[in-house]
Length: 122
Image (cartoon, rainbow, N blue to C red; front, top):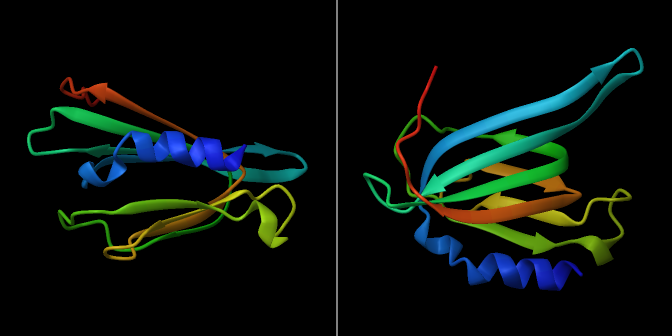
């Protein structure tokens, strides 16, 4: 199943989405502690954007965020780690490999592309 999901991701041509537009972190907090993070990224293809790649990562562990101040061109890679025997449930390793701006392990992810409309900020 992981290989099919990765093939679908590669079919979206993720290398063309080079600029980070947004990043969002969420997690469930309860009396029993904190759950894993859910991370959402939006990358755009050009400036101004004509299309966006939305990436949603669930069950995130080991999140590291480096310098995201500059307008770096990103290259996000996702690979399967399900067979490596890591912590139970972690199936993917995600890295931004151009500038080491982001890395994480996750249980699952969803990727989709949409035509860009201007984002509205509060």
